[in-house]
Length: 518
Image (tube, rainbow, N blue to C red; front, top):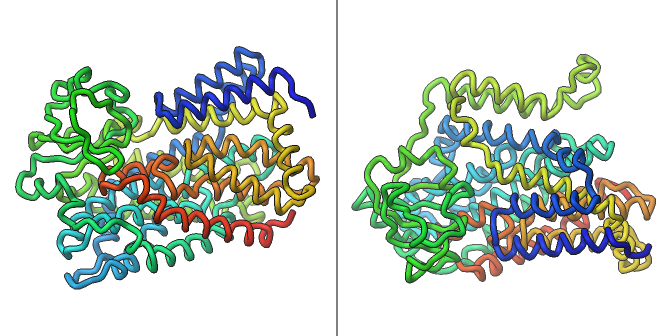
């Protein structure tokens, strides 16, 4: 297949997109939207195709799951669970802490958005680590990795799975059932957690608990010292401290900015970035005022703050979450489908019902529901679907797939699986998981078509490889959060995460063909 002008335009657009995302030029959603508009102006995408992603069932499901996760977070069920699981003895070992808390985190993350799970658990684990005199930096990267591993096990565990599921539905396939990805995900989660229990502690930095806690130690004596992680809606992103008057906007003074595990000097000249950790001098109302805002990913003053919803709402939130999971699981069974032929009782149906009920009963504040949705992630997903379509329309997906097949030992389906996995995994470490899935999906579909094999093994590999962001803090938001809080450097993620990437890769290419034949 030859190269035409449309292939060159799409390829150039993708290179530009990757470069801007790696350079953190602006928000990922806006970068990808700009590339989509470029493709529309070039006639590669029609306006209908540009807008199709915004009505995609997987994208809407992700949006509603943000609200469900917020309801569960406010119920305090997660905090209550993890506080009961943490060892109470002061002579506990780091490995003992891992054994108690990481399986819980992975299990919860299989059914809830990873970011609120990590945000809820960080202050609890901070308090516990100081109490038992263990280094906090030994626990935060494992916390993020456990959440990622748990998310691989179910359809709703991560937005990436739902993105691929949505693209499969658009392509005329049935998509994934609730626990289908768990056939491989559970094995990866088990051996991933085992690796961290056995080896993570010695590969993580050896800072003391006092050093790792940084400014929050000061908060023990002064509750007006707050640690804040900048979120996607922070209006000062890509602006300098001198240009953006933080004190005027939030009534707080910046003591310190941390990025990449290091405190920054000459604060006035620094540019705010998403994921930066700020140490703030505030008044007593700061957390109460900004705690519900997506301006900050996390706020902490060294104390665990009880969520707003208490009492019967806690139990109702758990009941509704259970109903959603059970409904989506059994709704795909043929016997259940025959009972309701006109209404598909799939994940989308149940998350819609549960979201409305949670809002109606006040489990999350319905009047503020837009605050709990990460709109940049949704725009990223919608644009990712359009970019995927542009790769198909231009012929770039077929062109890359043909070269992947030529490169892969005379069109061996197994070798194509290896190449697709590695390519997707490298891209997700550089940009974002959803963008990586959008890039890999059309190539996987085209490769399967040219080989005349079932595309399912390749699509599962895209899901796993897109989520397996362990070697850098860039590809997954939870890694970005813990990097600043734990004072980690980039090399810390490589030291701990690269072996986990290899474990995930080996298990995937061995197990995927066993469960989904070519």
